[in-house]
Every structure is written in structure tokens, then in C-alpha cells.
Image 1 (tube, rainbow, N blue to C red):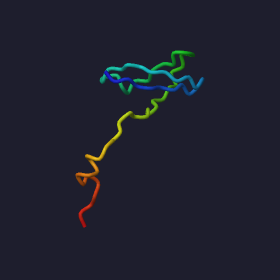
Image 2: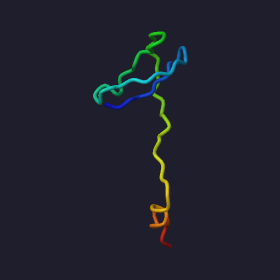
Image 3: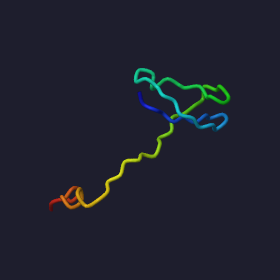
Image 4: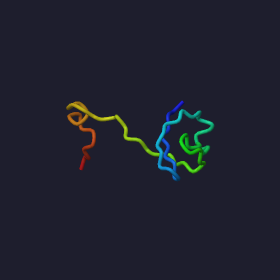
Length: 64
């Protein structure tokens, strides 16, 4: 199950929730004030391309 980061519109509290796939669009109540006014935040990914391999092999270059 994915972890979603939420922010409350009322008190600005940020928290994480583990939500099943079937309930991912359901509004999660704030854990601090209980309001049903939370929004999902897009978290920064830890994915990065490092090294010479992917660039050296020509990925990203356009053949003209």
C-alpha cells in the first residue's frame, strides 16, 4: 500500500497516511484537528540518475 503525504487546509498540519488502492481518493481527516479538508501533497522523489551509463549510451540524445 502506498504512503500519501497530506496537508490540512484548516491548520496546515502535514502528515503521512498508508492508504489502500481502493481508498486512495477518499478524503483523509486531519490527525491534529480532525477536519475533513486535507489535500494530497506530491513528495520529492529519491530517484536520480547517476554515473555515465545512461548518458554515455545516448539516452536523451535526439538523432537528427
